[in-house]
Image (cartoon, rainbow, N blue to C red):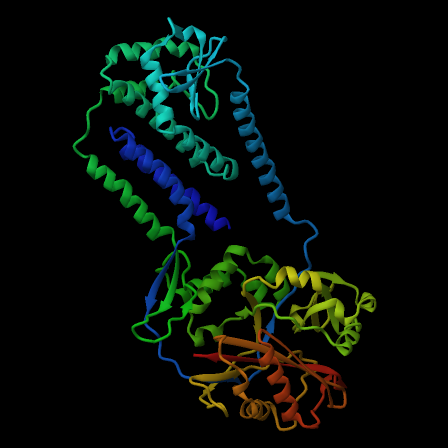
Length: 587
């Protein structure tokens, strides 16, 4: 939102700057009016324009990636701040917007409440008032004091001037500008636009008078005589407009030889603004592949000439003390929003080797899907020593779960927390996030986003190409086990080892149950293993229900009553949850 607002302000400032620099002093009033109105509208549209750049499709193979050393991804869930600054900002915005709205309504009301004699003069509506009010026009009516009527006649120069405003519908420009100011009052360029548009209106009205061959000097004297009676109302055009010097200059100015060049400069400025400020997206070239897939821009709004690897490291170096000492929870709080956003932009540009060197990673968080907790899960979450629990992003006491039943929730997610990522307030090895039915409904339509995580351990990646049992063109399934690491904690282990477990899951997974409509689907299986090594429950959470069910079905078949080596802590067997993430891509 902030980026869009800044682009709007910058675009409108550039456009009005071009007007004052090249166009204002040129005798091309109708083009200038069009430029001012169109450039203002265009400056609000540009940030929403998306330019798609075609890129050649990289050569890819279907690959399965395994990790010899387990990788721990730490996603730290913060408690919701009790004081929301965004609410304050919206309240301030609403209050100022309401102020401008009321002021505009009062201005219109002030004009409409004016009392006087209504007349039709030369097919124009005229309101003649007893007060000595200088002439002005609003909408389709000319307002003036009765002193301006001599022998039932209005000075033709005054009448032509105000009739010019009405005929060219200048009131529409001012109403549009006022609406823009009401809702986007934070844009300082609007005040320059209003000044420029009012001046341009006066140039057009003066031109309407002088085209009837009235003497310029006499007309200028008439304007000077009216200056002492200035009474400008908002949204109106007053005959004795106070920008007198510019008006007098333009009355005697001649058309420049460079009008065409200056018009071109104004149009080129708009084209350049689109190139600079429009949103970029990159797509696979359709000339290389039959299907064109839209991918996110590596650099969203600008092209970086700096080495992304060096820039990535330079940003992390600012927080090296926290990262090197393992203070990951503090790092997640201290990193600025701009640094985090920039790291997220740079991360896709790093090579696999460069990513493996880093202590942080970025994970695509899938769209929320309904996943109701089981009775057994809800009961296990009562264990305060193992689980920190949040409901609707608010931390709660574990014991309060007794007041809930499974049908009260539409979503549950469970994540492991590394030892260095735990805090004194939340020392538990697992975090549970529950969503009530209403909260889930409000958030289920949100777009997938990326989360920053912390890696522990050095990851050695081995790649292999495996064909699924039932193949669909160019399909592959990728898995990666997230194992809780703690020097006093040993994760549970499949009887034949983790590598054998992964291989069996891959070989038994039935891909024919998936239709491939979604290009990328993810799921995490949670294998509940008791202290004797028996599997008590298998659940899965992900963005595709068919994938979740197939993962559960496959893991159940692989285990087939097998007894795992239970997890241990301080040498003692304990119950644990083995996390098994899986990703399938359809290319």
